[in-house]
Length: 270
Image (cartoon, rainbow, N blue to C red; front, side, top):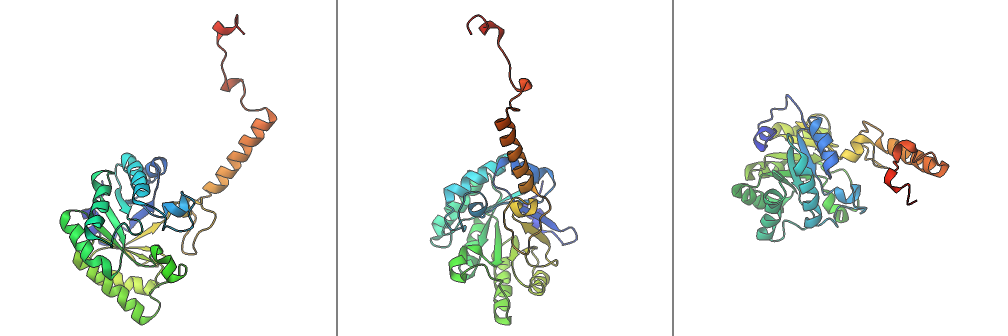
């Protein structure tokens, strides 16, 4: 079973694998495949709940999905991605929301989209027994501030801010760091600088691990970012199966005799 300690001690020789999951069936498949970390991402807003961004996702939304994933995950580390404004405003409320994911829903750590405002919060949570995965670079909860989802750390000043924040979160107790949509040479520098492992998404090959949204990895989403790779065509398989179902019902082929039964005791009545 993968633990926070296992992830923290990762030396990069065996890359960390991380995928999102939002429901029990998907989490079971991801876990059985040997993925190290299952992230119950606030990307559930885009992937499963029909929102255009992650911003509308609530603590109750996330908790429901964390519980579903945790109940079937046996080997992977389950990390809950804290939703927009569920942390960083009031420290007590932030701790309570994060603690709920561990205490009530079975997660083993939380992820915070990080910045200067989360350094002290990371330290507080860590001291209270809530392991924190930090997240720098492109942080989707800032979509309105960014005006979209642009690459981050593309000039020397911005790159140095990310490197300094990475060090600050390591010192505050974060056990790992997600780097999203940053130049690969910046990710390599941050990885070399830190003792805790980095997990990249759109950050090149030199991080200590990689993460993708599961819908992108399996080919379920209609659109995927340029840094993702489709390892399957689940959407195509689903479309084909649904089309075959519709055709079979409309033609009378389904249900067939093998899909029904007759009750002999009813023959005299009907």
